[in-house]
Amino acid sequence: MANQKKQTTESKETKQQQAQAMVDDLMKKSLDAFEKLRYYSQEQVDKICQAMALAAEEHHMDLAVDAAKETGRGVAEDKAIKNIYASEYIWNNIRHDKTVGIIEDNDEDQTITIADPLGVIAGIVPVTNPTSTTIFKSIISAKTRNTIIFSFHPQALQSSIKTAKILQEAAEKAGAPKNMIQWIPQCSIEATTALIQNPNTATILATGGPAMVKAAYSSGNPALGVGPGNGPAYIEKSANIARSIYDIVLSKTFDNGMICASENSVVVDDEIYDQVKEEFKKWNCYFIKPNEIKTFTDGFIDPERHQVRGPIAGRSANAIAEMCGLKNVPANTKVLIAEYDGVGDKYPLSAEKLSPVLTMYRATSRENAFDICRQLLHYGGEGHTAAIHTLDEDLATKYGLEMRASRIIVNSPSGIGGIGNIYNNMTPSLTLGTGSYGGNSVSHNVTDWDLLNIKVIAKRRENRQWVKIPPKVYFQRNSLKELRDIPNIERAFIVTGPGMSKRGYVQRVIDQLRLRQNRTAYLVFDDVEEDPSTNTVEKGVAMMNDFKPDTIIALGGGSPMDAAKAMWMFYEHPETSWYGVMQKYLDIRKRAYQIKKPVKAQMIGIPTT
Image (tube, rainbow, N blue to C red; front, side, top):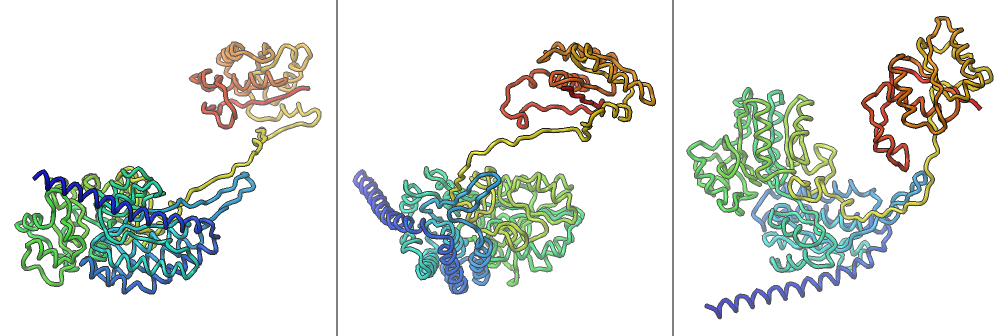
């Protein structure tokens, strides 16, 4: 027994050593290619990407057929559409992006923005979308002058390798360096681990199951991983029911529901529940009978992982029905639906399904519907996608605000809507981030910008010279007479220094106030010293509180002007504290302290020279 254990350990170590040597060789070739690619111009890069996109589009059908045959999952015609999407839609979206060198020279801000590549990308590809994901990741890597080494899913190895070869050949013909795209020829956990943990791996672009994504984030290297989806779709009572059910059936049957943004459960308002159920039946959806649910669940869900069993994901509704012990399911069935009333481990079918299978919940109110959707997201889908069907736009916004999901799909098929750019204007992508909700580093649809280092050259600039002035300024000789006509002066509080009183300037202001049509009451505060103190301001505020002025007249230089403004603020906002006002600052425009704008009384400044 001990000898057998020793042999097993040695065999494992040998596998690890062989995998490491293989990955090291791939990495060396990739780094050599990167050293050439990093100096390509934008024109060279775009020419290569264009050639790759055209090659992928040319082979969209045969690659789809190969993937469907090899994996035994999905629908070949739908996989063909995914391949076109990954080439045509993705390339069209990023083709005009500047990803090389100086991408912005802002003379006004005196900044220059530069795009630099990351290096060698580790591309993890799932069994659900093998060829389309390979196309997508290859194009966005090339667009950003990164090289890529793929680790393909063992159940989709041959179709994935064929895709990578087509892309690499097209790229080389367009001038790309040899080995810009590479792959691990034989799948193994050891090889994938060696790739994602290699110190020369610049970042990991991981699409796959929770274990793979967790491994990517635990590798010690930067990672862009995406989490699972368990998206709910709320059908609210105002929804266009016929369109809503059509969209959901379309989404769940497209490639047999393997897009991770697809609906996994529908939550329906009680008022329209029966109508929705009948509409589903019109589209040949089979409602699993109550006495069939346990048998079906036992065949569908892995009790250890609380997830759909591996062989079931991506199968047709009829194939799944047969695999899970359902009898007498019509041959034309599109989607299997279980009416459900709970979420969590005790309700296994509430998990992500990756197949044309739905659970359906009856909601007693909008609040109840929101709560069910939250629970479903929490049970394995937080951060991914949630859908709502409603004609109430405010409700759709409220749903988006409250759901812990990065994509809120409104009145559209969630699966096809979630990848973007078909039913909406979201960024098209086959790698959908789930943010911190789902333990991801990004919450958006991953694109070329995620594979760039952005540098900024910031030149010295002078702070803006500025001055804020009142709406009206009277500066001509004898403009003091304007005091006669300024409206809304009934009680004026004059703030000045003792010198202004001695020289007769205060009296000149008083004379003008007396000439107003309605005699104006006034009070003079002439104790402002140079560099006025807080005591001076507080003394003036006390006099204001007794006099109740509607106008404050500051007469003199900077000292009475500043004192008057401070008195004005504390008069109208007695709750204001000196503490924040007296803190040091670098730029008054950016102070942390909030200066409250007085609004009751008006202030008139009369500078003297």
